[in-house]
Length: 581
Image 1 (cartoon, rainbow, N blue to C red):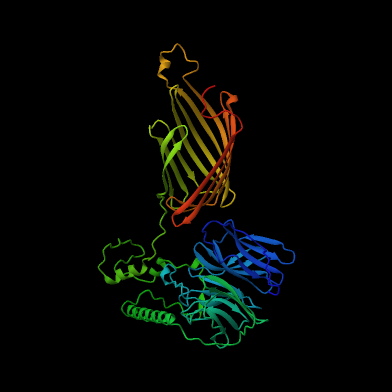
Image 2 (cartoon, one colour):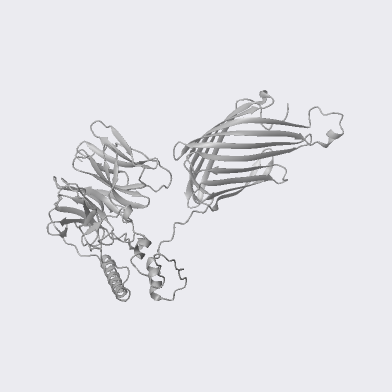
């Protein structure tokens, strides 16, 4: 801040065309004055780093049990860290030992628990959550009750023996990013006035007040209470900008009127709540079922739900006596299939799950590319080229195919390739056939080449890979001159074939993206070494080295300028399609 200069301490990731990157990572937090905690993603796995500012050393800890980490914070001595991590589709709070890397789960439900941090000098954690009611002993399968636009601030004491979280704020707005000044004062971001600003909450008198009145909402912030500084991120035009308030008075309070949009939102929310209460009251009057009076009600605390107390449909049905289909202890009575009782139908409706799925993924293929073009070959003349590509939705399976035929249908190319891309190693299988029909005044000949190839490719990054492909190639030469039948004897055989075993290795760079049907943008390059080892006559063995470079530059909308350059050389003079000498 004083010098105005910045220094890069960690870099990572890859840059590809039009890639959407995650602006929420890396996550950073200070363990102490000399140690910085960083959470980023290494090869798809969240990784926790401890960076020593003085020595520049970094200690990594993989967090492979998480799909994502949304936030974290250290306790006072920097030995414990609290994480907000996503695992199996659920976002919960976890406690981590910084040095040992051990992790303990604190919350376990379908609600989103985000932005955790420690209250200074205590073992109490504050966080933001979208819990819909005070008690958590509810059916977690009713996912429709989760409101993504309503978050409140909660705290949880690690020293307690009961699994209880306590609600701090109770609004219909989004209260996020809580920061504790002490165990009695909390600051957080809230959009209850329509624009996200900093608010202050006192645990002594349970009152809140607005601290800032920015016209543009804050996305993230931090407060240096000792020096009276505020740093935040807000939208400026179309870009996020960092703002710093050097003279921030965190004790002052302001008042701003609620925006018209927020008024409409609050009125709609309150109307829906009144309607739900009226419907619930009517339902309780007419059908007093599924009520368990043995459990006490809880107001300001939420019981944490563990796996061994998970509610199921069977738990709700045990408290109800079905008089229409009663089963005695020692007798088995056949269940009635068609009951005309309205009460019985209502009970079945209450215990029926509203969630459909999961549904198994079914592999379906679609055309990703289709090319039709004209070809002018120096040996074969004018022809038509057709190429296509098929792949499934997850792009685990890809099919390539193409055919080129001349106007006389005697010369041409054909190839078909399959790629399996589900694992780290990419596997492929390919068949290719090339035919040259040579018709001149002095000769009538046909050359053909058939190649069977399998391969494995190891990706080095998202843009580069190395490939090894063993293959078998069979070439054949045929003299189709009809005068050979009446001549006393040809100077050379009428047909001849040569078999080759070989290996092809490639280093591929591919930074292209597909914007649509036949729309490619980016750069491709390939260096290839290929060796053919003749089976019968080793003198016909040879090798080749080639360089292939292609660039697709987008000019305007669907107009793309394509450039291609190929350089190839053989290490011996024998050509693959050359006839016998």
